[in-house]
Amino acid sequence: MKIDTPFLAALLLMGTTLLARMAAYGVEQALVSTAMEWSMNRIKKKSVSIEEIR
View 1 (cartoon, rainbow, N blue to C red):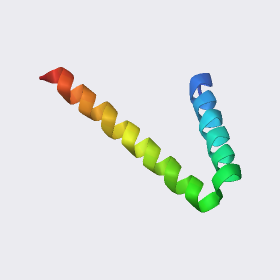
View 2 (cartoon, helix red, strand yellow):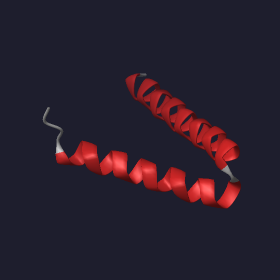
View 3 (cartoon, one colour):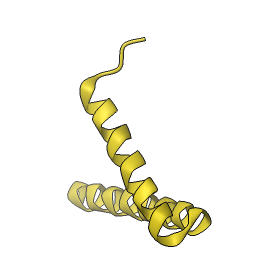
View 4 (cartoon, rainbow, N blue to C red):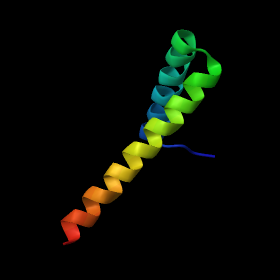
């Protein structure tokens, strides 16, 4: 299975961010806050793309 370098870099960055949050806040809060941040970023991205269409 071949995985592109940018994809691997993104996975490494996400893992590093999550580990840093776990060290600072604890596992449960780190998982919740990371999931919320990723969701909000996705919603913002979709809303911007919808505004560009108009």
